[in-house]
Image (cartoon, rainbow, N blue to C red; front, side, top):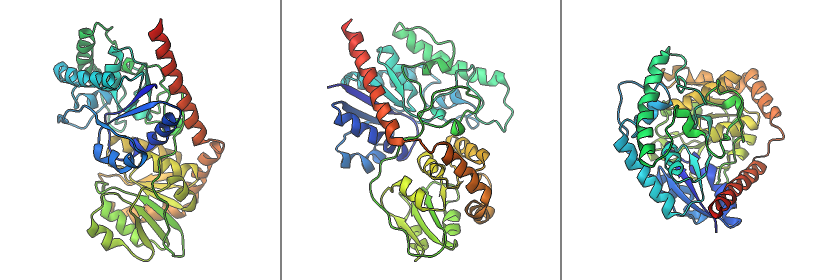
Length: 402
């Protein structure tokens, strides 16, 4: 039985686990042994027990604060162990042991650069399993992640080189070739992205291979409140910026409102529940509610946002961190939605929600995206991904036999 390790190192919430779960089920059904190493075990517990999967804690180091927000991908790595080679070595050794213990023939890297590094020291093939944010484009230095701020290239080079020093010292320990650029870390057996070109966090990437988004796992069906008017679905989290302002705007909306907000306090749920507004207690079928709704309000969750775009429905996003903000900017640049900037007061949030819901240009642009991908079949993509994983497993076995 082929052994596969899914590695989720950075990031939060259900999207990571939910996206891979349907693939994992199919792999297991076809005879593979799927292991999980997850950044947030408490999130894994929301979905994996029902599917009879166990999981391991991904190796991690507490975030090391730096003077200013991250400027490029290297700047993120420097906050999580790449500033000191000894810290990075500790993480790599832990990942190597996970790979050995699970007898992995393939590593699926869902924003897991250190797992990729560890796999390279063991000659285990890697398949990327995530969006463009997780994989900087093949340029040196890695690009400025804050294009609205002028950052000298010398500063970006400095950050890349700091991370490269640690990476190359670890590679030298295992008699591996040094990297000349950080992007070389992502030159793996399968580097296709789980995204669409229009939604790539790096618009300057150039030609690349995109799988498109996979269907997220579901746990329960949902019922809309029995109210007249437009339908709006909202996916929020307690840490979503301006979460209470968003709830207030949704509460004031004439129509039927369905909200999924895991972890939201019972006080807020009780305060905003109304005949026209209800909260789902379980993850919902995003594709289904997107087809039923007229618009969405999300924290820039890729799974939820893409579900709406594929259904031809516009979205208002409230991103909470850089990855989400860059993703939300691409949606806004498409003209298929708006962003509530987390650093701005939410006084215009109700008006923005009304614009997205009733402004014809937003619906028109969302429908254009949906029309472009009208033949896009998420389930077929999943089957292609499973086939590609099995091909990599087979090639690893063949390599072991030569």
